[in-house]
Length: 312
Image (tube, rainbow, N blue to C red; front, top):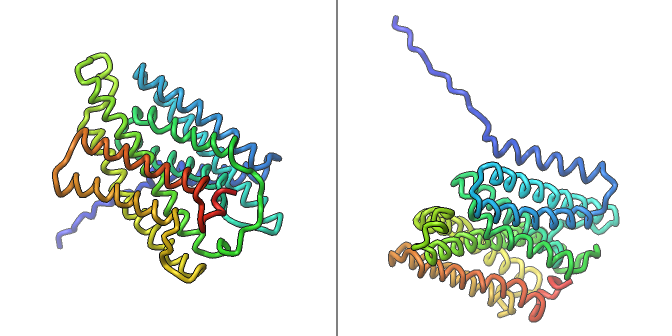
């Protein structure tokens, strides 16, 4: 009887997953053991994000492998500190008897945006090895974190009745995953336009990846988060019906969320069905990101409507 040899394959755990789990565990331990309040961790994360932006820009100019590795390490540290702040803030809200996840007001939302955007960018950097995009993404992450630190209230307060719902866990997470993904896509689009502008300058062109690669990374970021943004709008409508008795009320936040959806939906349509590539769709992404900024900053701060809690 002929013996059949069976090849045994070792199933390895992705290294990125190992680091992610280790980071969550370390952040949890730091938030429990070290005697610092949540704002300390958020401030530290902001400073590290600023340093990360500088190092990523330095890498874009010098294209040094060691500087690139340092840039990734600095961003990872910033994310660790940000996550520690989020966990610590959750613990503090629990100790005060007003527990809620750390993304319920303007301060928490902005710092959560920074964390998700940095995490998505790291995934793309690991997959494509394009550290150059970090020079365009990290300044945006630093800006959102700094705006939270210097302009938003840090005070922990009880949730308003409409927010005391399980919808807060799923609707807000999907919304900010969308915000973060569009931020990374914006970085890719800006990098593409810089490459396009300096196409005839060899010294500058050699610092950036090919336009095809930048276009593809931008597209992948949007293609991944667009369904998540769509789910966010649907979930928000379901939450609105439960909280306010109607799925759609033409609230400013609802309207601008739809405008963002239309912009990036038009981008995907133009790229996939009409075959658009290059500078035209890159500018569409930039314009789309402007609608994202209006949707969050302008609407939350000046036209909050039913989403007035977001300004607190």
